[in-house]
Length: 256
Ligand SMILES: NC(=O)c1ccc[n+]([C@@H]2O[C@H](COP(=O)([O-])OP(=O)(O)OC[C@H]3O[C@@H](n4cnc5c(N)ncnc54)[C@H](O)[C@@H]3O)[C@@H](O)[C@H]2O)c1
Image (tube, rainbow, N blue to C red):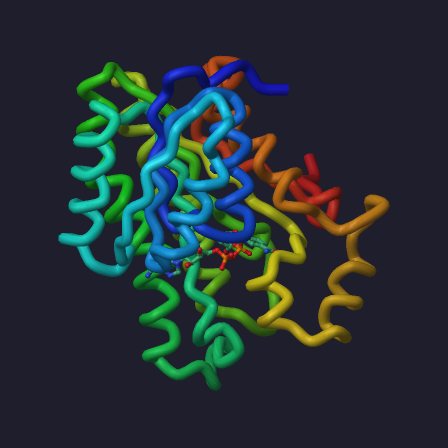
């Protein structure tokens, strides 16, 4: 599906595990150099170790997406290491308070604040810190990991849905405002992917219910998402800008 990413420098924020990690490996296999930023440095470093032997190279950096100085430090470290920036995959989410994220009346405000801090404001901080470096190179591609939750209604996970809907709006702003300067921004919106983190945050019964709603033969895998992220980073996607692309086996279908 995607063309080679040979020599492209791509910063992956919140990508040490799960979907993000698979995207890193896929892009390294296509020759990209990856700055792997995550709160969990051990996981980021062991992912970078796995890149050895692939065409691309990796550089692990510990950072906290909720802290503007830390985000700046991540970008600076990546640029110092690889000489510039051609793309960003901004992927972090924090599931610590996920099971306390209910509905409008029962969700504590500090849960709402934490979810938005990491899953929306943090993505904005990354885009803001990395964009000038991409502009110096004449443009590039930004992919935010959103979710179908940002497009569909649900009884629970109010804060998460709001964060993901906000990400879609942030992505469209970046695409619209900076498109003429060579920047493409898109979201990938996974449906159901049984990563370790996802499994840790759901019951077996919930997972069975969710899987029953997928019209394809199986739930999604991190590899399904990684192929689309690599494609969006590539020249093959040069005229795709401002889209939130669902990769969900048909779980949510656009009507029209
Ligand atoms: N798994 C699914 O079914 C699914 C569905 C839709 C969307 N998504 C989205 O895909 C993305 C990846 O999800 P995943 O299932 O692979 O989860 P994951 O927990 O494996 O990945 C999230 C990463 O973010 C990092 N992180 C958390 N807080 C951070 C912080 N403060 N600073 C820096 N890094 C931080 C974690 O350490 C982790 O590596 C998320 O944005 C999630 O919302 C996942």
